[in-house]
Image (tube, rainbow, N blue to C red; front, side, top):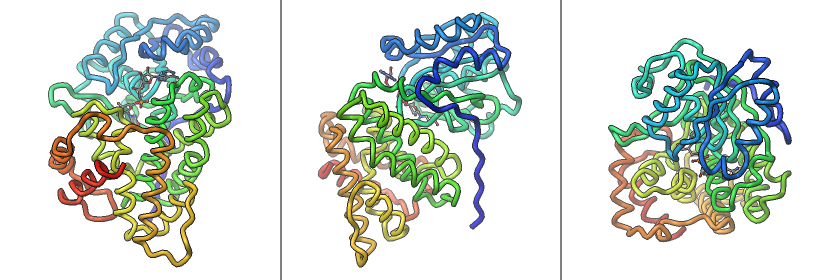
Length: 385
Ligand code: NAD
């Protein structure tokens, strides 16, 4: 099968690189930039650090610090309007996926009329390049710094939609492991599982290809090596760097193959029950990997082994799937990832999500996905995880 890979944007990776933000903006010709972040990033002292670097380069700033989780469309409209009013010539997004995606979408509104909703989906793609955009991840999770789009909540339809293409393209991602040191264990665990979901789902997607497989394999290996460590000792910079690198690789790996069962089930779970994105997507990952093992046994064997399990040479696909399922469940327990019961949900509430999952038009899992399959995965995840 032919393979295609396009790496959407350059990434500057390394400890201390956030200090270069100002100099990089100067190289891009910026004189006044819109800086986008949320209160958690502000309280962790990260925004001030980056602002210091920008001001030291003689660049003015205007801050939009009202980013919300699963960013709603109206907040993007607010951020864009602020940028237009202040006549900025660039954007900087600092934070997790919510802040980076708000910045990506706000960039569109600097050179195109609001509201942001008109730019959702394939039909809404803006085909002209906008102003420079630097994004700086502070979670090792979404990999938004290396993906071509941003995820925004359409509040009228109550669904998450996507802006993508050159109009919201990242000019430079600055990926500095030091910025993730302040992440509390619970967010470290949830966002870390998002990395694993991106890598595992893109690796086993029907649209997986040789380029993305290389990136996904490395990301899975890095998660196996570092995720439990960063959840136990958040100050371990080497392990933080490993996870952040895995996050960027995961973002690259999914740009093409995309994700399947974990994310498809996670999206309505997150939207209905306010479960953080990474935790929601990981909810059915162990059982989903077991389910797809007969279609992609070698890949599932790789996943199990990368997470520290031993798969005997004569294991059947079903046995391999079970070992991989246990390996992922073990990791989830080790990092104290909350399960469905811990959100106070009943099984009935959880199973009621299945029809919503089907509305997403699933097509990328390597095994057939029916409503009965989704119900079974949710049922098992509720009892087993
Ligand atoms: P997030 O951006 O909502 O951040 C979660 C929390 O962590 C926030 O409260 C934030 O303040 C806090 N935080 C972030 N960095 C911190 C730090 N270093 N120290 C202390 N606190 C910190 O969560 P997320 O999981 O990174 O992003 C989720 C969003 O990204 C969702 O909307 C999801 O749909 C989207 N997403 C986008 C892509 C993409 O390619 N664009 C891919 C996957 C997910």
